[in-house]
Image (cartoon, rainbow, N blue to C red; front, top):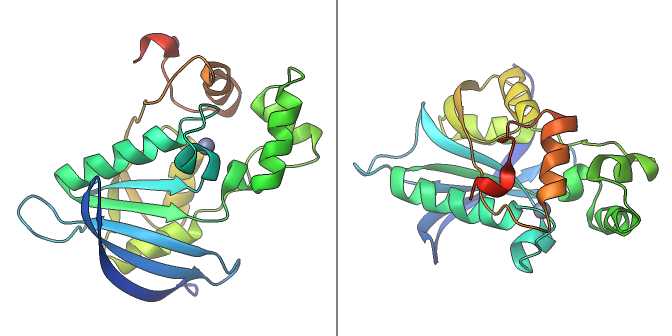
Length: 208
Ligand SMILES: [Zn+2]
């Protein structure tokens, strides 16, 4: 067993508009980022364990704080929090994942290039940046720390699933999370489906 990617720092209760959660904070040993595990008990009152519902969510300031319609991160996070509050589970919230790992400023640079017609993938490549540089070893170690060694994963992203498995988390299945599709991000989601292997329906605008 290799050394953990994270150090546990503190756990406390935070009431939210989605319900009350236990929030556990970790420091990423490699990047220094602070990650959170947002934990909801199951309906029978027991803590999450093997086979729990899990969302591994990448930080997105524009989508989550400002309600940007360029992506679906805000509605996905809202839906994930509502889902774990109802059924029990964990949302692992990863900092340092802005713009699929290129950072906030570069994400906005990529948006600028998209104004000239590039799609989300080509914009990253035009900036000399990887299409997706996100790593999920920290998420796997946070789940392991909670005893959540197998998951029903709330995700459309096969790379996320593959990396969690590589890091020793059993993924029992993927539960699609298709929310927040609108006129401003249809093209973005089409690219994620057609060029980046995400599992999304063909006609997103009919998906609600
Ligand atoms: Zn986003």
